[in-house]
Image 1 (tube, rainbow, N blue to C red):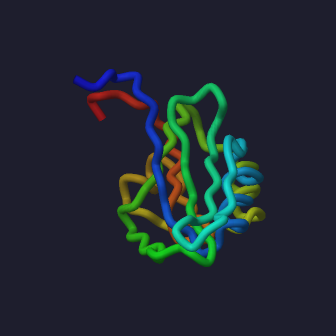
Image 2 (image 1 turned 90 degrees about the horizontal axis):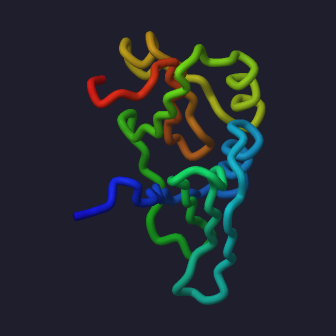
Length: 134
């Protein structure tokens, strides 16, 4: 059985690694937890982003050796439950860092704000609190 406190890594390919890193670091406030540069054709560049105290992180992989192009859909969401209204200043910071606010759906538009990162993946900032019942 898996321990429910296990660390989660969400990995995504990126054609715009530096731009996407800037979006999550400068726009959202994540930290660079690890960085690696490809040293052989079998490797790729990567950056791991998150908060040091969190049990999850976002890994972005890219560079000239990237074999899979990003192919985000409208349902590829990274949802952060803020338990409070979304701060307009945060939306502005995400847009200044290369994001673009989009309409996600009636549900998410009611309960948060959706911003596309430079690769087209969607970040939802939800004003709701997470509950197993929602």
